[in-house]
Image (cartoon, rainbow, N blue to C red; front, side, top):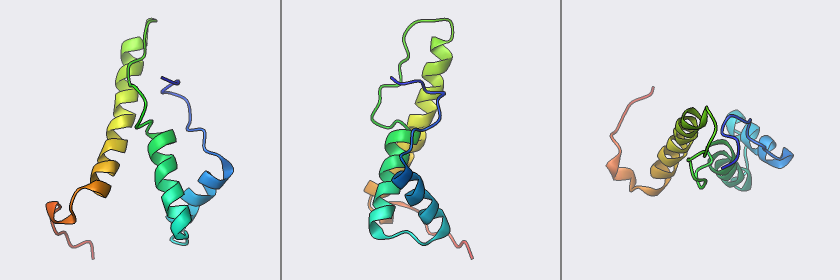
Length: 91
């Protein structure tokens, strides 16, 4: 497990893709890149949460699991059938 407290190591194209998604101007390729970078680098979704040894190991593990939880919720929203989500009016 990499340092769970470290900032996500986004490459320039990934950061540009995330900015484009936030601005609503992303291409389909940028959208896919942004979601992948958020899951892999910000949420560490495919990493093991356990941080061994040291006095702060338990806290670091819990922090890493929190990051993974966010990624798992994004993955869940992408993979589950849309009918499993409630209708909500955001207007």
